[in-house]
Image (cartoon, rainbow, N blue to C red):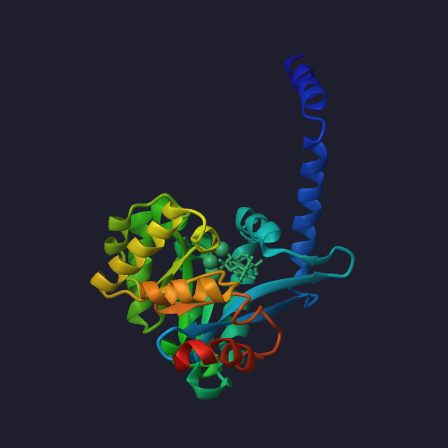
Length: 280
Ligand code: C2E
Ligand code: MG
Ligand code: MG
Ligand code: MG
């Protein structure tokens, strides 16, 4: 009786729920097939040094082209992959592919790979990193893994141990989306990091909102004090670029410098935009 009533309640009060659950299951089934059917590829977005104007590396961003769904956003499928554990297999593929492609890039540029907190907690990550580096021939220092701030806040001690192990391999570690995870600035000092990536929501708001501007300024200053370089995400305008450069931020990424692309095609855009700034 209670069960029947429960079902009725779900149906009458949450009409979209069953449908959403069914769609989730379809998405999960499709994701399971995606690796075998070669529906994934990586797009690369350039990272530019604000000190030299040079492209120093690229962030690998996962792309899923489903024959019927079309291009599915990682913001949609990564959470499903994390809940189902599929992220372990997918994440391993991303590492292998990114290292393999980066090994042939010019001038020894680095590749930044997003790694889920599920992967960090699995204990398999160090061996997956070692394997991908060995098979590709990519030197460890040219690989950087990006971890979101939320993961650090949720599972600090476990993640800190994993980070130390990864850095022993010579692989670099960046904190992604900083400012969105509600950790304090002091938190930054607790983790061995090679880079702090300031979330693009602060960049987008910086000119209109004094608070966002103050956050960026504080993070850049703290980074300088504790010796961790900062990078600002989501730079879309020359004004934003000049603002970040003025604050002493070390590097930038964003549509202004280059969109994520299947093949590397950055230089001209960056040089064109920056020519005047860096000449001055
Ligand atoms: P993220 O790591 O913070 O990556 C930056 C996101 O911002 C990317 O979205 C990128 O396309 C977008 N972006 C870059 N520049 C600009 C800009 O100037 N303006 C705007 N509006 N957006 C910009 P994308 O590719 O949709 O990825 C979303 C998120 O999905 C990533 O955020 C990352 O958290 C996750 N993700 C992507 N690839 C992977 C992966 O291989 N593994 C894992 N675990 N997560 C991934
Ligand atoms: Mg990232
Ligand atoms: Mg980010
Ligand atoms: Mg992000």
